[in-house]
Image 1 (cartoon, rainbow over the protein chains, first blue to last red):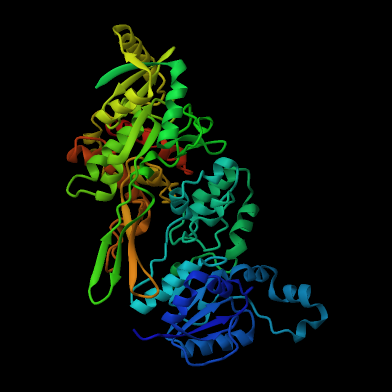
Image 2 (image 1 turned 45 degrees about the horizontal axis):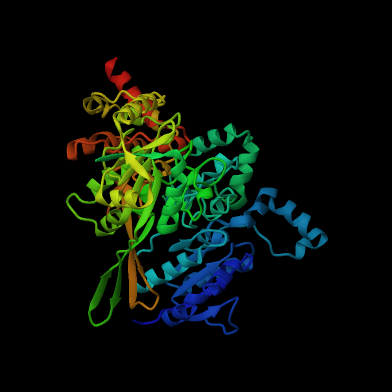
Length: 251
Length: 343
């Protein structure tokens, strides 16, 4: 089987998603045998504009990044967005809540005119994204699953059901019973219920499922004495850029 | 069935012997609200007086949440090897409705198709049952599952100063003969046992009007408003399925290694409450609405297997009621079906 040429790119983000690929350790050698990595922002010095698959981390927050992502889109036949920033804008979107000018003022003060900073958006606002590896950080095994599926030519199985399913498979006690609030019932699984496994609530870093029962979640949180502001704060941590999920947006 | 009695003073020695001689799985307090069936190394960890249900149910020992079914290698030809793993172990302190749940799964996994993975585990699992106190959400008495007549090797019932022991298998008898100082049950012991069971049955506070549900359900089946009302707050999160002792649906995942030379197929617990469950090739979804899925779950639990095996696929343990954040209550819903159709 021919090895596809792959570029791994970092936009606005912490670099943790690329690090997750490096963290594959046991699978890394198999990975570089299965694909030819021609560009890897965080890991190799060489640069190439010749790739078929682009794996993109980070959100778009500068004019320069718009140019970069458009160029990537022109070259790559397939784009895989990895991590909350690339998929939904992620934490960076919190900037938008202040308004661009206010945010620039707060951070850059009198230098703000010199800084190239625009409203934060996810990657798919500018180019068509084929697959999403959600989460903060993304599940590295899911990234492998997407790559593997691309090589063998099948659709990767990305869960579109709530975290509760994985949480119950793992035999966890519901964190609500322990007095902790959790967005699990409306949030996308695929993380193997990482946070509830360590007895903390889900913060929806993989976004919300396609058909969430938001009203039920509001009722539930209210029952635990939380105000609408608290609820919004929880939703906003990773999902300030959009009230809707990607799939709903595309419909 | 053999009937024996074990003096209470000899109980600890019996259990200790089993813990040291066997892989021993029993209920242990996990956190402030639930117990779980886990390997027990010392009798001090064992807590058979569990008030609440165990999460997950004991079925996880027979039908694990994730289970490798086959491995394969792709060379000049494809070589496939089944993976059937089972070890002899004791499941101790499992209650009657959970045993009845396993009995239901026995039927499911041996009808139409013999599921070797399940059966190999079931055959090697030595089941020692014990009653536990029903919770407020338990309606096993209405479902006829508060008493197990088979599906176990040994069943211990705690009477005043002794345990009344029912032995259902030769294997169970060997264990009792080897490790427990028992004597034959006398007529008085039987009377004590009957008295105990009468009192035990009084402890079930929740009851459902399951009589004629089979017909009532058809009358309510097309009443959309009724189902919409019941499913209004449903998250479609699947918690009800995954804590259920009788839910058996699974999804099979194909994992090929990055070397593209070998791989495996794994099954994992699935849920009929999630929208992907009804999704088929071509993109059509048979049950896109949550009220449809909830209705289908009730149908499966309370009607489908009456046709198939003459059994309910619900033992009334109340786990799904406890696990539901939207407070959907199958017992109340059974009763409201009755009310709705008798208006």
